[in-house]
Image (cartoon, rainbow, N blue to C red; front, side, top):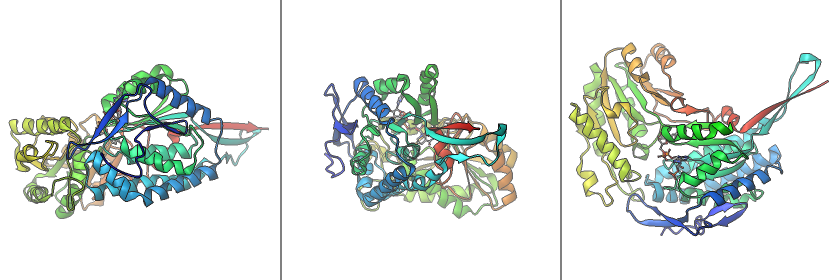
Length: 481
Ligand code: NAP
C-alpha cells in the first residue's frame, strides 16, 4: 500500500465529510509499473452521487465574494506547489509517469489555480458605457450552478485542475468524478482542500466507475454543467444522455495530432520537440503527435535521428532515478499499440526503433518500447485512430496542399504542429488546419493563460484563458431606467 500524509483513508468526500461507499464496496488501485495494489477506494453509486449533488446545490445558496474565491484559488495553488513532490509521487504510483514529469504535472495544475485567482477579475459586473434603449445596463456573471467535473486517468491531477479552477472562480459548486484507474491524486487534492475551509458542499468527490455515477450526473436536475475530458465515444454518450435535460456540456475529447515537418525546418529542433511531445506520459496524452508527416527530401535524415533518440530513451519504473518513460496504464493500452504496429507492418511499414521484447520482459507486461515506423500510409490504423501510446509513425509528403489535406482528413481537431523556417508558409498552413491548438516550431502543449480545446469530434468548449470561465458562468443583463 502507498503510505502518504495526503491519502488519509482514501475515501470520497461529500458535504464536507470524508465517506465510504454506502454499500461498503471497494476497489483496488494498481500501480501499472509493478502490478501492486497501492490503495483500496470506495465504489460509490447512485445514493452517494445524489447526496453529493444535493450538497452542492445547497451550497449554491451561500455565494462567495470574488475576493474570497481569489484567495481560495491562490491558496490552493500555493498548497499544490508546496506539496509538488508528494503529489508527484502519488501520480507516479497510480499512473506510471516518471516522478520528475509527475511533479511537472503538479506545477501545471497549480498554474491554473494561480491564473484564475487573477483572471477572476473579468467576472466583476460590467456596466455598458452607452444607454441603449435609454437605459443603464449592467451585465452580471452568475455561477452556472452545480458543475459535474469528470476526468480521465492520463493527467490525474491536471485535467481536474483545469476545470475546477475555472468552476471555483465562477462560484459553481462541484461534484468531481475522477477515473477509477487514478483516483488517488483527487483524494490528495481534497486533503489539501480541507485547509481552505470551503463551505460544506462546495466541492464533493465521488469515487468509482462511471455507471450509476454518470447516470445521476446526467439526469439530476440540479446539475447544470457537465465538464468532461475523455474519449470521443464517451463524450457522444454524454451528449445523448444529457440532451433531454438540456445541460450545458464542455467536451475535451480525443485527438489525432498531425506533426508536420517541411524541408526548410531545423531538423534537430523538430526531432527534439517531437521526442518531448510524443513520449511524455508514454504517448498517452491527447495533444501528442499521432501522425508524423515529413517532407520526402528530409525523411531519411529525420527518421534516423528520431530512431536513434527513441532507442536511447530509458524505460522503467517512474520512481527509479533516470527513468524517462514509464509503463502504459494497463494491458488494454498495450494491446492497442501492439495492434497498430502489427497492422502497419502487415501493410508494408518498417520498424526502425523499438523492440517487442520490452513488453515480454517487463514485470507487468504494461511496458512498450518507444517505437518508430517508416513507410506509413493513410490506410493504416495508426493514422486513422488515436494510438495513445509510444508509437511514432512517419508518413512522407511532397507538397503543402497534399499535407494540409492529409492532416485535416480526420474527424479529430485538437492539436497540430508545423515545423518550417518560413513564417509565410506557417501562416498559410496554420490558417488552413482545423485544430484548436497549433504549435509553430514547438511541440508545446497548452498553458493556463490561453484557451485550449478541440474542433470537430475533439469536442467543444475551452479550458484556460478568459474563455475557460465561459463554461461555468451565466451572463445576466439588467437594464435600469
Ligand atoms: P474515458 O474512457 O472516456 O474516461 C474518461 C472519464 O469518463 C473517466 O472518469 C471514466 O470513468 C468516465 N466514463 C467512462 N464511461 C463513461 C460513461 N458512459 N459516461 C460517463 N462517464 C464515463 O477516457 P480515458 O481512457 O480515461 O482517457 C483517454 C481519452 O481522453 C483519450 O481519448 C484522450 O485523447 C482523451 N483526453 C482528452 C483531453 C483533451 O483535453 N481534449 C485531455 C486528456 C485526455 P471510469 O473509467 O472510472 O468508468
